[in-house]
Image 1 (tube, rainbow, N blue to C red):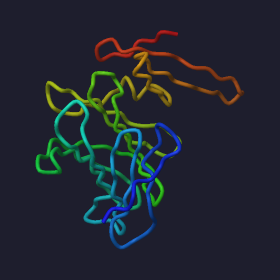
Image 2 (image 1 turned 135 degrees about the vertical axis):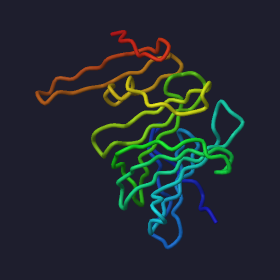
Image 3 (image 1 turned 60 degrees about the vertical axis):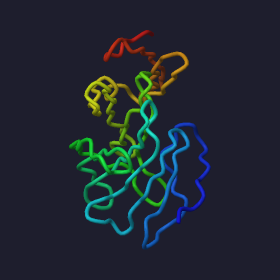
Image 4 (image 1 turned 30 degrees about the vertical axis):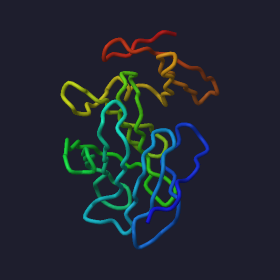
Length: 189
């Protein structure tokens, strides 16, 4: 039985686990995108975590599974629709997101403002994310080198902008604002 969903403290928080170590999966919730994640403790057959929820822009539910070696060496992202009944794709990836009793480093939200949710998987605790945008024509997630280049993007669907905030070692800081032009991000200022 799943525990009540956690309340999260930030709009774009990564999945927060609702309870600690157990022989059965721990459950998590991401308020930003309505995913529920299971963290397998101990790890089952290479499955580190599985996140499920509605897939906005479609009538289907989505299941995103992280496969690899414990504790967090993710080598493959598996995407399935309709509760895992229809496997859609396997994506090779080499990342080390946070996967522990408090967090799962995955986001599922519309990052290119086309009405379909996209996937971001944390590369490591302090190096950002790998991005995969949904291609409705091919019914697949496609790597987004455009987003991979943007440092810590913040997405504003109302304005249609992607903002990158940066800071140098010397203490100077700033931001860049991008807009989507087709499948390319263009710098606005």
